[in-house]
Image 1 (cartoon, rainbow, N blue to C red):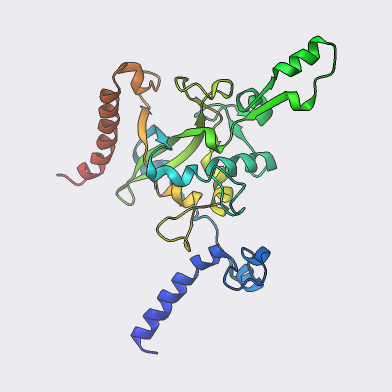
Image 2 (cartoon, one colour):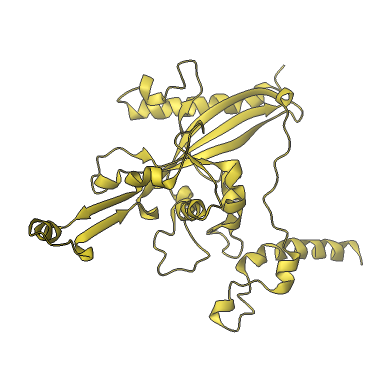
Length: 296
């Protein structure tokens, strides 16, 4: 085998690996076999999250924590938001919120937290008031006033769904690895953000964080779930890959600082443009640090 054939064979092997993401779609004899892997695929499947390398405390020359808001109205962030309607789409595609919520309910993600410092574990039952709204219709109140039991169809239940998620808050850790001499980023956690379930129709309400997920502990779940790749549908990417490689656009709204990690809006108030400038200044200061390492 000459060098040209060897190179072509290697490229073919590399390109054939992502094809497994489509399951058995080209060989299916019935619709239910489309996304089932064959025995050969299962045997050869060693697709796991890329493990993090060990980083010792002495290897970190400099570090900074940042908090970002990822607006789901931005096109680059759409893979985290869609699909919001799961009735007319296959079970292999779900939004990031649906993936996380299902994993929490099933116990695949064993803990969620109340804040971005991950000091207090909570359960879904603890935040049920923020996720579910139960109300009674006028006919239900009429039945209640007449001393009758309230009919089930007179009780309205509204749950926070993927459609209601407006953004994600991300907490990350920037650090300089002195062994490799480069600036790196490690995502620590994220939180879905939505409006108050009691006032979802009010456009003026302030968004709230529902819960925080410790990202390193959720990587296995996020690696199995695939996000849509609009450039090549035969090669979907996992949510783990999407988040680790920062394939999203975020705006910094907080950094660790001496004033108790205060937010940008706390010292620049009522001026959205200046807040954005401040966010970009923080981001550029972090990026410039790596370039400054090599200036003598």
